[in-house]
Image 1: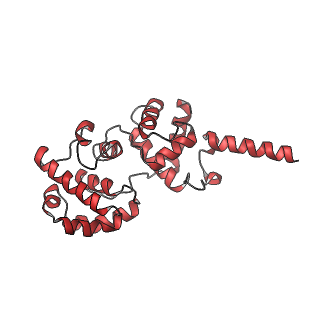
Image 2: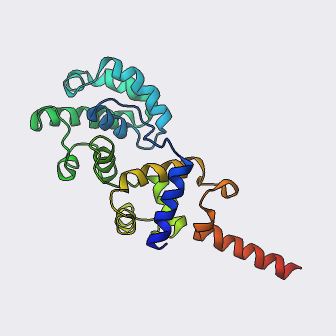
Image 3: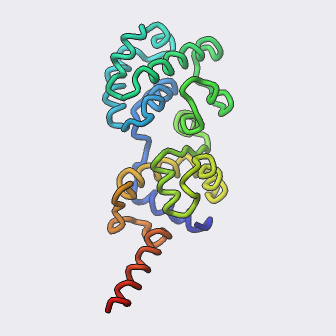
Length: 221
């Protein structure tokens, strides 16, 4: 996909999702950090259901550092991989208290040193909590990028770089949210809803499929 095409895609998706925003619910950068850690291999809807109760009692790094392992695991059980996630959340809280005065840092290099935080999580926090121009690649973005021909769909890092090179400035954070919503509700994994897609005419996968279908119809007639 060329630069002008991807920017046109984002333009249309902004109109298609006029109120696009992160669907994880949070009030502080630390709550967002916890929510994104919990969202690994879990839906935002389920994470929100868990954090609704969780954040009523535990809101700060101090709260999470003090909670017992058993209680935290009990609360996180519905999100799956709850033992690993409980360990990551508690370790993250302890590190923030020890090294950053209980505050979530706003730099990429610092964020990826926090337990449970990789490139995707760091970029989500930079974009959402600190309004920086960062692009996170999750499974939805990876799939959509492959269908658009932006990247091969195998490497989140290569996809992140490719999108960064193609998009006009200061659009990366917004583009992430738009592509996540697009992948979640329209360009779904098993059976994309091409008939209601607002950017099908800009999608190489759709256009190639339509061309093959026309060729097959012509050959069969």
